Image 1 (cartoon, rainbow, N blue to C red):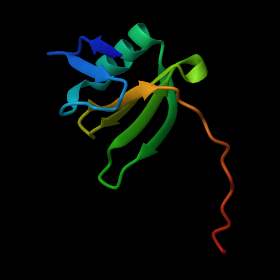
Image 2 (image 1 turned 135 degrees about the vertical axis):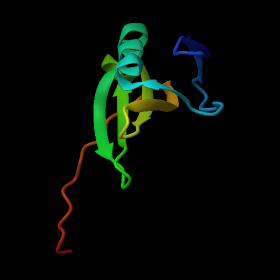
Image 3 (image 1 turned 120 degrees about the vertical axis):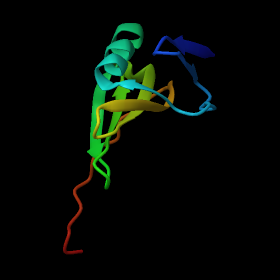
Length: 97
């Protein structure tokens, strides 16, 4: 199943995980598009060693999901997308163990 996004020149999402080179645009534009088209919102976030921001977005029920990476300059690139997102229970790790 293919889904098309209209980001700048356009982004093609393929739910099987096969995807061409990441497509990029300003973070606000990417977030708004994913919210409007797929009802996705951030569900997880992390910071990379070089100051980038990794975000997982999903819609209610995990029907679809997207992963974007935002550079410190505010440009976000869609790096993966698919269907069937499931959250996992977090387990505390003892740093002394």
